[in-house]
Image (cartoon, rainbow, N blue to C red):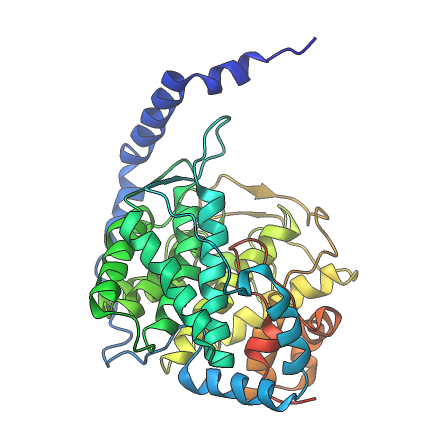
Length: 403
């Protein structure tokens, strides 16, 4: 006989869920004065990027795309193998059919959640078709990427849910990345580009504007990288500066010194699990790559703190021991006494971008990226990121030197 627990009945009731949303809203709006002050201080960040933005200028500049295109056309490794994996993905197909919706909800509440799966799939398809066009020159992919972007910008009106910061940050970043590539395509009408910009500012930005100071750092980081991306695509320097300011000294768990907590490279979520730890450091690296595209060296911040986080996480997930300092995060909600082995050994597709920066651009000694190199070697050719979390396919997209 099937039974439903009291908690399940509680969450499945529509009116109860609405009441719970109201309670959550009150908790956020009635937070302690100190937390409110921290949020409000973020509205006047330093000016990190006063000059005009480079376009395209998120994860891929025109020079980057040209390198990938030339190496794939010549059949040079490792781009050849990386492209074979990338092309085989269903999201890289020009036959993809988008499913836009007016309302998207990302929520962990039982019976809640709406259209988030369709959005996650469509943003991956938009991004990968944009790249397929940039790499192959096949206009079928350009038209598909624009079809997906236009379909959503004409339809999406509401984004909410208990996890809306994650949904808007993760999905928004991949969609913005697609749009930033496609802005160079002459077939995308200026009016449609403007409508896409309006969607990012009016639908995706509001849920991420105050970051997520109550949560684990990967939440802040999802907000931060999308805010930075919107800033570039919409030529909004205030948003860009706000995200970069949080990277360096934000009060939440997602800022660089609060996420990679010490010089050994321990991560705020190392005591939680290895999937979220890799997710978060992947977000940090994507912000650094955007900064690099715009002429900024965020990779070098705090004495290459990002690399230390990658080395620590890669070493542990490759089976070796690492030191662990008992730690309570900046919010005080997530104390950890030991490193978590949950998900240990399941490497995520985040290592190539960071390896190639420190190895070929920064030209650091090999010992400083030893475990990042080993993780990249083990994954190569790097495959898809998990859902809409990270771009993945780093062997194709971020390799800087032939084997």
